[in-house]
Image (tube, rainbow over all chains, first blue to last red; front, side, top):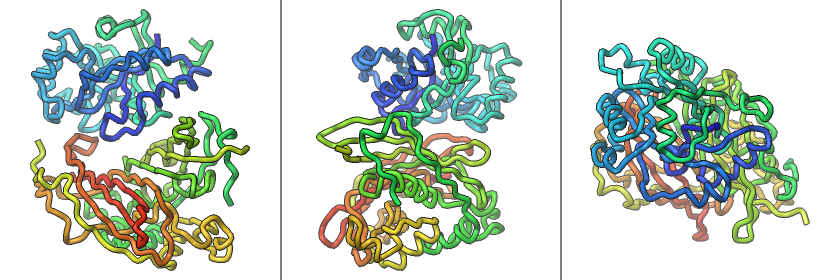
Length: 217
Length: 142
Length: 146
């Protein structure tokens, strides 16, 4: 099963694509490539009310909701956002305590994953030697479609040196960037709880779009 | 000057003919002059460095104009309804900046034939210092 | 949280009157390498859809809508400002001889972090109207401070 783990819609401040535009684009992508679904990870926000199930069904695409929030150790993707987390953390705050966030997200049945760790200032690589406790981090975004080759190389190195699992996500802000990097899971996933469970299992790998061509896997 | 483009002829996934720009320092200064932008960053390498920049930079709007040029060349000025861009990185004089576009949506709404097109400027290092989206309305051929 | 005067958000203010000259359109075209006769060739443009020269779509970005009327956001952050983004919605063409009136308002101020550190984004919307009272362009400009 192949999912794009990091996608922004117009609900993010700097993205222009609507959810439905991505869904129609997937129809076009599927002529050549495999993609089963995506996770909408909006910047500094999580809309509890937004329900994508009708659209998901209409276009036969799995849609999950997450968030991308900002901490003093860089940006984190959060999968499995709960009411409790939204009460406990102000998602708009750009100086969240990352260690506390990672622990609390895990305690509440989710997972927090450092996004684009190889980027300067907003990636975990810049902070790994800061002396802070990173032991709760199990997974990083090893492949990010918006990062340079060098930034992704730093992310892979971070994963290798610290025995972390790696996911892939496009970080798409525009329709045509969808799926440039994705994650290939071994087992099928049907709900956010299963997605979180699979992320802790480590049974997946980050891949580039070209690796998903029909007949190529 | 404009390639005829009718709704039937456009498919999702189609790419526009790229437009290559290599703005020189003279062109950037000329643009800044029409704009009335007297600041160092568009006029003087050494003074720009003192502002913490790598040197003179290409105004983002100058490349937005180039993207509009690519779009109106393909679809006409009348067709272009909206153009939005994000400036994500510095562009330097003499960078090879390629304007590109790819059709992402095609639908009819309230009797109008809408095309949506992702647009971006790519440099020779494969980076995209400008990304954006255009909304276009074009007629049927028949 | 970013510190600024929230009462300024949404408040409209007049941000300038601009008389459009043909020579400015031509200079703009020369600077960006635009050669479409619709913008640069009076004779050819006369036979075209607009009956004369018009300005290219993004010409409006040259109009400096910073008047003394602009309310002070009292933003206490950053020493440098950059253009973060721009969007234009096009309603009517801009022609030489037009007099455009601009009205602006700040719609959003928010902070985020990027590769270069902490940033504050300000979004400013401007509506340009011509002498016939027609809406010409609505623009949204994103200014970044760091």
